[in-house]
Image (cartoon, rainbow, N blue to C red; front, side):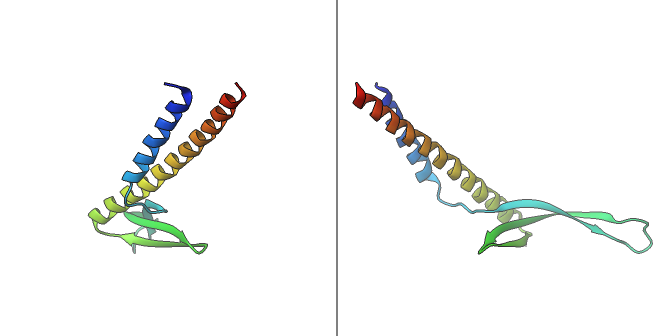
Amino acid sequence: MSILQKLRQKRQEILWQISLIEEMRRGSVIRQFLKIKLKGKRGPILSGPYALFSFKKKGKTISRRLHDPDEIRRLEEQVENYHLFQKLCRRLVEIGEAICEERQREGRR
């Protein structure tokens, strides 16, 4: 198998992996702690953790508190899928550039 064929095969594998990603979201799911001052206590105490989903929309950060464990898990998976999608797209561009280089190299022979 030639180098060009191997690169094309890798490209097809990445496109297949991308096609399997159905749900994705930009943003992040974090755990937030709040400092609370209680009457009769000397210093603040930490309350939490509270799950928070944050994302940017039209240049503004939007956050919403999450309560349902199933929703938290689902949003975490969707955010992870988005990061995987970005990684696969970067790899796809790298392979596309390698294909260009290899075709150019083969044309010189």
